Image (tube, rainbow, N blue to C red; front, side, top):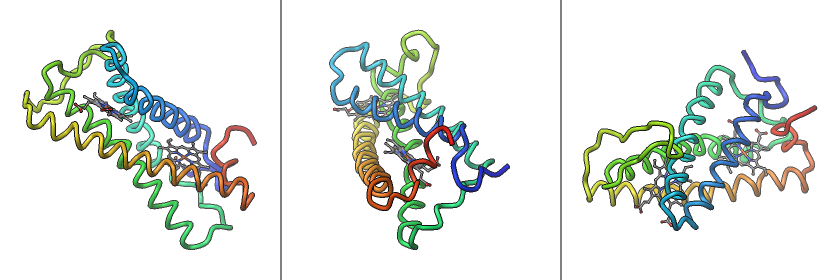
Length: 174
Ligand code: HEM
Ligand code: HEM
């Protein structure tokens, strides 16, 4: 089944904003966390992002993209495609690296929000691997933040400079 030709479907919109909110919230939590409870919340929200991205990917692959707005130039199409693809990769890589870092650390991943049973990736306990995946996790997050800045700048330019209705394609309602 195709998405409507000129806008995203309700499911795509819901997943876009849910994941965007959880992602930004988790970055804020990560940069300010100073307690075990907040750290557990960080890991749990991250796993939630991973699971939701799985759902989103399945949705994406079974419901192809709506066509990009016809008003876009060739370089804008290219920039949008590259950015969107990179987001999907990072939305998988960031939580997976975090999960690997947690799994190889002494404390392990722990239960989601302290109540939903969860498990470690079968990587064994290793200080070296913990440091490596932890560093890579942070690096991937910084790449994600740069991408968010680009993506939001693009959205705002289309909304307020081009006024071409690009943002409306990703908002609920008509
Ligand atoms: C939405 C996904 C995620 C984002 C945006 C994110 C972001 C971050 C950031 C910014 C830091 C650095 C904090 C600092 O040192 O100041 C961090 C650290 C960490 N995160 Fe995540 N994270 C995500 C998912 C996860 C998941 C799923 C796990 C584990 C299940 C996890 C485990 C960790 C661990 C263990 C550290 C500390 C790494 C170290 O030892 O240096 N993260 N995360
Ligand atoms: C912060 C995390 C965000 C991520 C990871 C993200 C990711 C994505 C991805 C992957 C797409 C491609 C469509 C899809 O596959 O669903 C998309 C489209 C879009 N995003 Fe975001 N987004 C984020 C935040 C935002 C914000 C804050 C805005 C608005 C200010 C925004 C506005 C849009 C718009 C307007 C589109 C549709 C572009 C088109 O016409 O094809 N996004 N986003």
